[in-house]
Image (cartoon, rainbow, N blue to C red; front, side, top):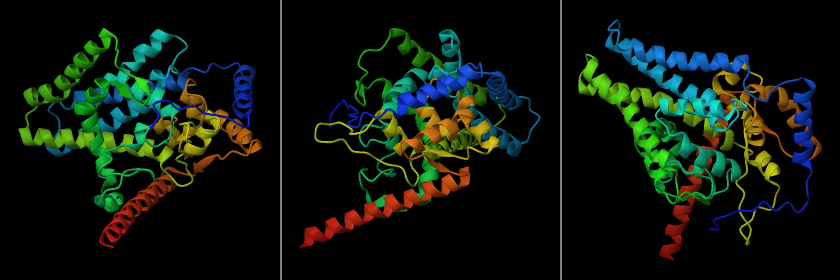
Length: 373
């Protein structure tokens, strides 16, 4: 596998330059900033405030154990919504035109137990550049022994049942992320093609300090101050992370593992024979873009096409520029893949899980026959 991929646009497409000019004209004509607006500030206050309120309610002693269980489930959901609606934009530099504001709001990632520095590399640099390219886009490698998300994924017998258990594993991924994944990624020397061997000293401090803060808030304090047993605590911790992980996992998967999506391979030289922007159109999908509630909840990730093309534009502007993207794609003969709603996208993702699972089993059975001949 080549460490570095180049996008070789033999057709010299003007799609992206034309699209960028049209989007720039939209913002200029309407005298709009590409950064956060009043809606974005409201969402930030709502989701961060909601998370803090739910956490504080646990310590009031006003609620029964079952009610506390409901609170921690919603706490997990609000943590995911902070990731979608606040942290994600800030880490991309899309929250504000001022770098210090983006850095400050990127810190909200620490509130959900994640590390913004690691995410910036794995997501902004690797995933956005090499979207859906097997062995390069690490988003296709979620528990690869159990879940196969593309036709190039490694095949294991258990994967034929993946459509039955995948959603549970999406939920469990949150626990792994908070307690394991960030540490594993941080100490890798390479992530994709990216040289990750040298890191600023401050990032070592940030990793351990903010993880310690998170563990204090969600492990030490509950065990010290809540009138619950250790096993009741574990149930609550599991429920919170299951709801958080499920929401995170579903929204991200519905953008890149649905029907109509491509999984391009490199040529013999290790290159992708396509323009980068055209590649994004073939590997990314939208869902529920006409539903304001879906957009409000998902932080613009349901407008994933617009996000991949314009990651430094705040997500509150994506619905307005989506028609420009769709029309320009049509003019250049490029796909604009979208599902009408969250649920149609979910059904499409489920079909893909069923497709890649039996495909793995078919390969295993074929190998067994070949070995006996």
